[in-house]
Image 1: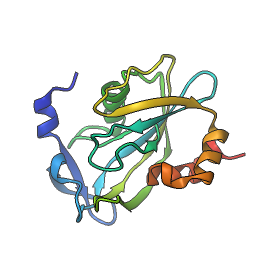
Image 2: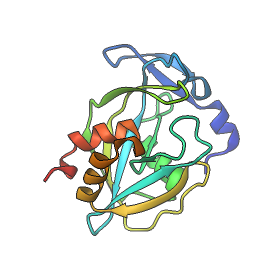
Image 3: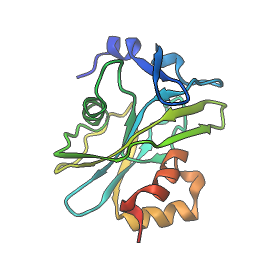
Length: 180
C-alpha cells in the first residue's frame, strides 16, 4: 500500500520534446499553469464480458475533478518501469490486479488546459488491462465507476465530450477497442 510519505515524495520524469528523460520534478509541482512535458500513462481496464471500466475523478482532484475518464492514469516514478507503475496505480486507485496488460498506444501525447488553468502536458503511453474482479476504488482518486460497452462509451463521448477528460476523448478516437 502506498503511504502518505510516498505520495508527498513522488517525483515525475521530465522529458524533452523527443521524449528523452531530462530530469525529475516533485509530483506536487508537476501540474500547474506552466506544466513541463513529463511521462505519464493511461490504462483502460476490460472485464471478461468485454466491458470497459470508466471512472469519475474524485471531486478533490487538482485537475478535472468530477469528470468521467478512462479506468485510471498515473506517473511512473524515476527508474520505475512503466508496467510496474501501471500495476501499482491499478492497485492504489482501484484495488485491482491486472491479469493481462498490453501496450496499445506507445507514443500517445497530449496537452490540455483545465478550466482552472491547470495544464496537462504528457507523453502518455496507453495500456489495456484485463481483470477478473470488481474494483474497490480509493475515494481520494475515484468518485464512482461504471462498466460500459466500448461502443456505448464512444457514443456518449460523441454526444457530450465536455463530460469526459480530454485525454479519454482523444484516446477513444485512436484505440482499436472503440472502433466499429
